[in-house]
Amino acid sequence: MAGHSKWAQIKRKKAVTDKKRGAMYSKHLAAITAAVRGGGSGDPSANLGLKNALSLAKRDGVPADNIANAIKKALGGGEAVQLDEVIYEGYAVAGVAVLVYGLTNNRNRTAGEVRHAFTKHGGNMSGGVAWMFERKGLITLAKNDDDTQLMAMDLGADDLEIYEEDGEPRMDVYTTFADMIGVAEGFRKAGIEPISAEFTSIAENIVDVSAEDAPKVARVLEALEDLDDVQSVYSNANMDFLEE
Image 1 (cartoon, rainbow, N blue to C red):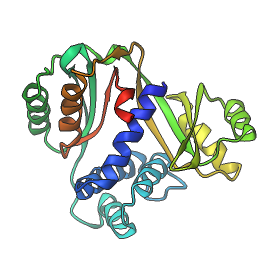
Image 2: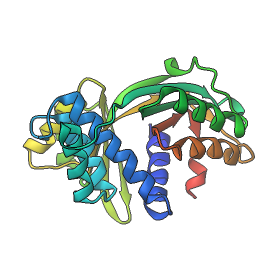
Image 3: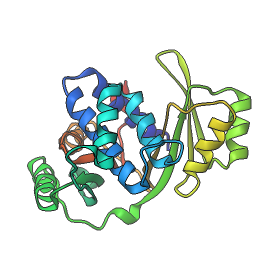
Image 4: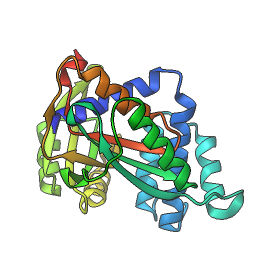
């Protein structure tokens, strides 16, 4: 799991330092809209899906006014857009499996854009890779001391990753898909507010990518992530050396 979360950290840092902040905000607002409608409430205390979407949006600095407007529209206080969840499967170069999650109001448009992103960079949207990934929960905390690690295991964590980010302690807590919301709430009840709580997909078999192929794989992943309707992109590529 270490390779997956480290790559996620690289992408996360890049998202908040490049010129694509507006697109990142739009993705978060779409997720908030979907969570409000899916949970039937704009109150995060009564809608845990919304609470988790809000934690991710706040982590990435989405303005409070934008969030409030998105919730208002989702509740019918403004022009509403129906968003459907979509999943696409394919391969990048070097046999790297790629899983794409999105939210869209036009399935045909999104499918065409995703297919184009794959083929333009040497991949293909062929399907048949979802079985290689396991849906998991990922909770990130700003603490990694022994007591918090023990609490995580007592709450039902499957695995932990301890690290530092910009000199600050961090802990990634992995859970089963079904347990993520309950474990996140357990931390909150103990007075530990997660930096983020989200669902993720973990590849069961990792492919070691060569230094020659890594930039080609990265271009496919980044092209997919840049699409407006794409929420998250996962692969089974091991490219930890790109962190160096």
